[in-house]
Amino acid sequence: MEKDATYTGFRSLVAVGDSFTEGMSDELSDGTYRGWADLLAARLAARTPGFRYANLAVRGKLIGQIVAEQTGPAAAMGADLVTLVGGLNDVLRPRCDLGRVCGLLDEAAERLSAGGGQLVLMRSPGRQGPVLERVRPRMEALFAHLAEVAQRHDAVLVDLFGAPVLSDPRLWGVDRLHLNAEGHRRVAEAVWQALGLPAEEDWRAPLGTSVPVGWVARRTADLRFAGEHLLPWIGRRLTGRSSGDGRAPKRPELLPLEPARAAGEPYRL
Image (cartoon, rainbow, N blue to C red; front, side, top):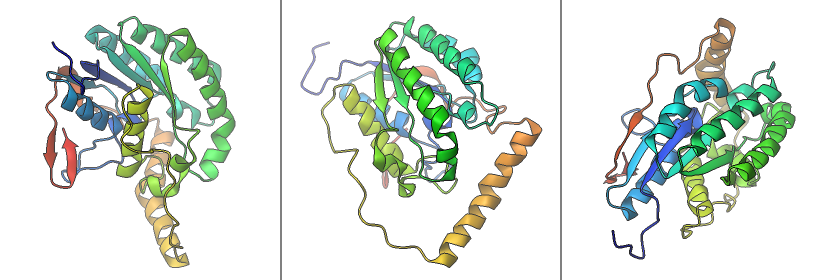
């Protein structure tokens, strides 16, 4: 195919991971999730006729499950662009075996690299607050290991954790665990630029000054968070369940993608 000024060089993308790559909490009007991987795929498809996309990510998955369930099928697809984000669900658990997590990330990268595509790894963002501070040492150790993995496999490493704006609570959903629509949009731009594609904006630009939130509004938000997200999360941990149990990937096959624009929801898939 003759290449023009808009051609990216990538004809296919497969995304592997957990809820971050599935797209929570970038919710569309029909209740489904979009997210940075869908946005990135749509932008690539807009420049490359016949572009194909698969998203195997499922919320709640630990790195061992990602290796066992996703890396084999992803590598077999032979996509020329592969993204891998995982391990944070493990790190959030108090009894995390960081050495095992790092070893499984090595295994995942090895399998995905064998497929021949350009591998993309990420240092995931973290929301400001007590949860981040409690797990920060483990996150930083994990991210230091990711740099070694990226070097071994000639992977692109996108440093989202090192961007202060992505820790701003205003870029996070009401569950306080996942980025909102604007956060996912910035991640898509970050990956786009890391791939050497022309920047459309400064994804690191800080947000404007926030309007102080009153005590009543803060407590109302805290109660909503506890009732809708924190208590169910604790319940799943106590019973050994996951939010992804029994859930299939939203786009399990590497199929052609035709981006469509819907009012208020650009690049809906």
